[in-house]
Image (cartoon, rainbow, N blue to C red; front, side, top):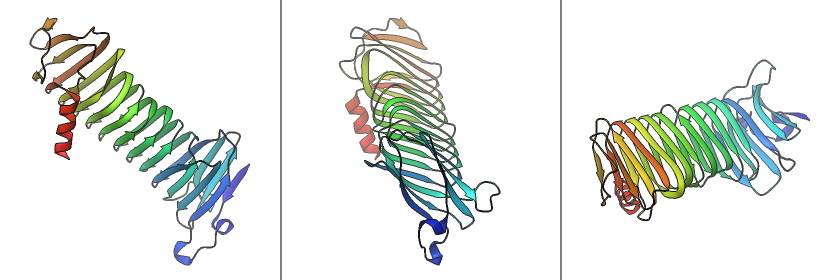
Length: 296
């Protein structure tokens, strides 16, 4: 079923509003959303209905093409002339909380709130902000930042030019930033890998038994919060920086100017911390939280 939603078919608008779209329609349970938007912001909220509301701001020369085929709902802006893609379009959607989301764009800030499903977002230029998300979470931007809160799943996050922030989330995490900081606060994952090229790395979270943790940055400082009851083998190396800890550590099992190894508790978890040009600091979670509150 292909529906091309035009202005006149949807609502009666005043001249100042001409071109906008506002429509609500039912979707089957299990439908996935695919939204392609070359230019324009995307804001997605959720509700507990099997309906989708589409509000879009665009010119009179653009229509919103809605293609509900099988289990996939596709939204695209199209030129009303039938020639090529539509112009700048800003979306505000409300979708079922359990609807999986796949958003792609060239120049688009994307905000998703309240999702209880898989989320995939890719944009060339724009920030990505996600609150929620369950299962596979894949967020990529070249020129923008990524913020994730209250997610639960397998997270893969990539940005080339800005920072990554993850808070109050659970699951395995793989995060990479080329030019920007990576900050993980109150996270709980068995496998966490964080890499930055030019930026600081901050971690505060649970260290699970037999977990695997890697934190690396080429040019930046590292601050890692270690819970008091952690059972972890820590291997820390810095080529051109200092290593400090705010609490007593056992004797290093490998001591050199560049590399040190410490066994805390039974050492069942493995943590590797690498910095080329920067300092490494181990602190307690309460110290890191106090420092962050002071910065705010």
